[in-house]
Image (cartoon, rainbow, N blue to C red; front, side):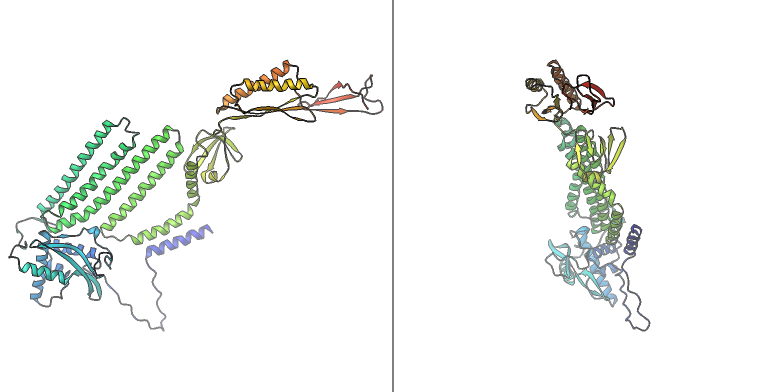
Length: 560
């Protein structure tokens, strides 16, 4: 049955990786319409994000013919129309380089339908703005059909506003004529790349230096830095926080620098990766700081089992952080990871079914640690197992028995069983039954009670709430029942106190001539004069409970 389940999940996993299942071909005698094949847009204009990315690539290559295809205008049918489109693309590029801006890559919608919560029509998106004559003009894109496909392009209304504004500007004021002797790298001048990278290094370096000085000052002020939670938090948080703050400052200042839109937009796009790295760096350092602080405290309390769980949780959180950061970075590069995540989900279900006992033991270990029914060093009883706990691990607990053997119990079973912890008791029960013989008179019985009470009263380790009473008259002895507690949590101490109490009681009873009863059995033989002594008394054979040899003694009562 397990093999069939594993095979089924493996089959589903392969189907998930293979993609959607297509319909089977129709029967030969059935006429089915031919399915129209839809090819992806070669300019990648399906989503606002991919459209902006393609436009930036075209501007970086100074390919204004291709850049013009991202404008919502009729297709050029003549050389004049083509030159007009190229001129508009060049002018738009110049406006972006001189005070214009586009939204960061991560904030643009990666859905074909665009954003629906931006208070714009469903077929419109705002991707940035340009400045003409100190007036901000939004850059809007619209979704329309081109060659049977829905694509996003810069709206004709935006192009009209830009064209009307640029017609009122003197020639060259829009920056259309760039110096021809500048060396370009990836479509932008080298000085622009240097200016942006220098800004990033300067901002991050300055903030990192400030954070290092703050941590050094706190280290001098804190007495025990290893045990200080505030210091550990700031030590872990300040370096990645300085990187996050540097990213925010870079976003703000980069928009104001007179640099090429290609360099600015490219660096702002990959600055999102730096943001993800900063967040993951902050999370990893914070997890390490918290776990090390908890481990140090637990080691001082000799709770080693919690150290194992904290270590496991730290590794798990780190793995999750790295996985989510990887997904965020892949999304920044435009890689769709939805199919991979679905496949991993099916594979995770199959793995969970195969490792359900391991998961059960892991949950059991967390339950044992949270409920704390036992700790390392405790003397416990679990079912038929009696011994000392040596280790509480992630999967199982090891117990050293009285025979000096090791018994390993899975934590899943341990958490569901009854656990008797002898180490957790605060005092020990002292509850002996003192039996005196029938030969004891009533006065001697009163004296025996007084002796037992006196011994209990003289012992300082006996708790105040004790009692010693004549508990019963059995067929063999008078029973004096003692109920008291030895007020100590140490096993060796209570053993010594118990021995001293019993020895003192016996010694005083012996000095008073009061004999303790012992288990015995009397057998009386009677018949026709056989087995009788000379004075007519019967012979009694008394058997000691601890001996197999009978002994005969005279009984001072007439035989029948």
